[in-house]
Amino acid sequence: MDESAKPEKAAEFADLVEIMALLRSPKGCPWDREQDHRSLRRCLLEEAYEVLDAIDLDDSEALCGELGDLLLQVIFHAQLAAEAGQFDIGDVIEGLHAKLTVRHPHVFGDKSVETAEAVVEEWESLKREQRSQTHADQMADIPKAMPALARAQMVLRRAARAGVARGAEEAGSAIVEAAKAASSEPELSLGEMLLAAADLARALDVDAEQALRERVDRYVEEFEGAG
Image (tube, rainbow, N blue to C red):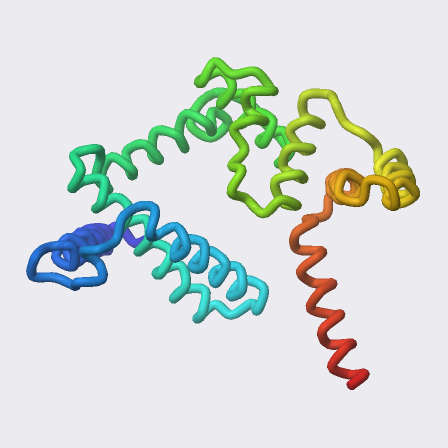
């Protein structure tokens, strides 16, 4: 960014925060005044998915707009917290600033890291150290509100970093064995198949959620073509 543009951008951001405060004020919007963290959960999730849609469509104009909508959710939640005397958007930014500098010692310190995978391992290690966590603690911290398949793959990635992982061949065998047992314990067997599929995706370095989304899209197109 051009250094001369920084004050202008900072002023625009401050104006945005003030707009949100106005919307929440007695002179503001009735809908905005009624919201709380919990009621906004659905909005936050929908905006995140709309960002993903814009990325999948490779639509930069849509992505710009959707990122703005997602940023609004961050500012909204920060305003709610500020009103409750908990924290404000400045605290959010300060915390993020500290996190980025501390967890990138290869950029802001004297640590040497050569690959993207090594960066991820270093990031996870620093998080465990800062929070006094074990690998199991870190795995338990993965949000349960995530889509189940995405959460399974994230759990398995962390297990692999801890040295506990099945190979692609073993994951594939688990799918076959679970299918054979499906008649007696269908729910448990299906869960095992999905876990094995997520592990297979991890082993192949494929995003399981995205792979399923793309396959469903293709299925819909095939179905429409056959109609």
